[in-house]
Image (tube, rainbow, N blue to C red; front, top):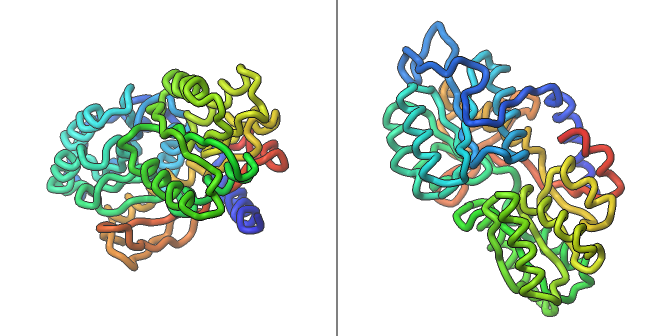
Length: 356
């Protein structure tokens, strides 16, 4: 708990500086007229350089905040941010946007991948054109980007979520996971760590009965939650490591009067989860600051374009108000880590629900 509260103080300081950000959550360019650059992708002179971010899909509050942070970082550097997101969370829609950005000769593309591998041809084409490519939040494979921006240690996230739900259900009973899409690399990595944590003998009486996918769409997440409750009448806990999913599950459990009967935790936005935490439907949940994830990605993109970093292990750069960050190993590729997840419960949710 102490480490979570210490992180919380750090997050307060960073978010107080970021609170004035302005964002745009649709699939149109933001902060600019979005006209193609007349200069080479990574050799612009005398004009603002163009930095694009592609989120998974529109209508996602988490994505809106992430793009907000990215925009702030780019504008702090005096450059132009282009914010994009398809209507549906598909790789095909993101590929089309990548192709458009290549034609616009942007300087950098940061992508929250809807599929780890399907985007590779388009992203390699972008890199071959001199565009600096990075991923954030949900990674693309190492051959498709120069570096990945990771919101928190995947192992810590996965293990923490199992520890939390086990405590909520008294160490005994059936649990289910309500994830985003089946191809989401971040979700899948967290789920693998959840399963590893469950291998510990102290969870002998905790049974994972189902991993369901709501595709980060509210209506589908509601339907999947209802299906879980119908298929598993003895279900004791739900873990939703997705902001859309946990809010949808919170509504279903509230509407069905299941407070205290089916426990809920996962990764959620304080503004969306406050009512469920305050009511006790979700005793607590976790997250990092999505504004900071986007903000860090923006400064990493700037550092790639100006040549401060190349994406190699051990390189360092300054990420605005977040301070100095170092590139570390990430399987076959490299990454920059934002920090640990933070616990939100009834003791602190009132402070955070108006922040993000």
